[in-house]
Length: 111
Image (cartoon, rainbow, N blue to C red; front, top):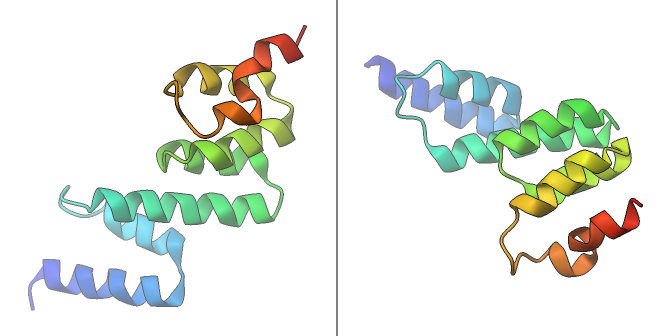
């Protein structure tokens, strides 16, 4: 068996076990051809792990890498990081689903 097949089998096993930390480690140590959607899924799962334990700062870094704006907004809110919320609102496209919730009017909230 070559190294790529072994790596893929190891990733598959860790996925079934829900060991997202090891999945991410295996994806990062690979040959650079890691599946982007799997990387995002692993980052978001690790972000969820930290958010479930109310470790918001740790969750933020994984949600940023996983491109999960909804959960990122929740973390910024819980951290009372209004500058982070504002920067997130500015970076969102005009028709993003978070904007009607009120994040777009954040500048007016923080007077």
